[in-house]
Image (cartoon, rainbow, N blue to C red):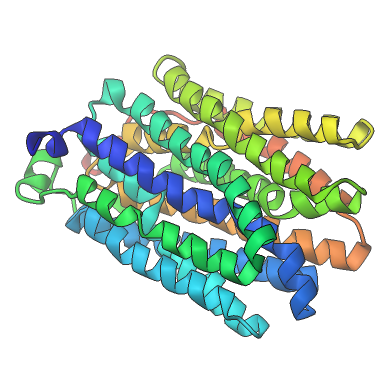
Length: 401
């Protein structure tokens, strides 16, 4: 049994459980927008800004957290993240002002998500698996995060209905504690780590990445990914409510996104082992835009919302294993958590704008129409950003001199 915990399968299983809980709770925050805004007398922009700040903090702390995880191992970083996550949920439940909401749900939980989600887990899993198996393993981990969204959203909705939003947040904080035992399954031993994977320093690895045109194009595509998915995750429940549909339609729509993302993330990992990953990424981004167009032009019903959610879910987070695998193929796995975390920073800048602009433009215009069309245009940009990306490692510095 002891030897099992040192196997790649153990790291994948424990990393998947961590992603299931961390991402599952996080994806339910959009359900708290209507009850909290109504009871506390805040407009939608206030709540949207707090969650936008969460995504921004998540992005800006991710490269640093990734560097710490690469150096000290993902297990320790996850334990610290669990403490921050629980503290943030408790503080969010106790918020009485927009500033307190921003500090708890924004700063504390944003930092916690840096410790407990894709870049840290992908770094551990990526180092445990060979290049031939890596993309598929990352796809399985991504599917686990999607399963969390599917499983936790109905639970969060049930808790809000039965206990009220305040106690629901406290209950979700208790659920986060189950991540602690899983953290021990992704503990990494650092002895010989640098020698085995290459002794390039973190600063040298980051400088090399930032000199790469392909790294910047990959980051631009991931910016679009963050904008699209976070706008939908935060504002879709309110959007369907404004259309006169039942609140349960919004909950079920987000759950369907999580359900179909399980299959989409897994398939993206499988396809990424066979086809060029930048082409797959470009295809996902333009397909999202086409799905949004179709949703906006057909009559707004519960059925059309469910079809939209299923299609969007299939395209949801398959970008994560593909993007992280491209980073690994270009720069290796020694500093994977940091370099993937830096790309993720761009994702979270997009997420900030998607969340905040959704609330701002709604409060300004009384409609989500403009933000939907911005999302469509960005998908087209992401397609053309990914097509020219080369996956092969950049030439050594000496060769370019």
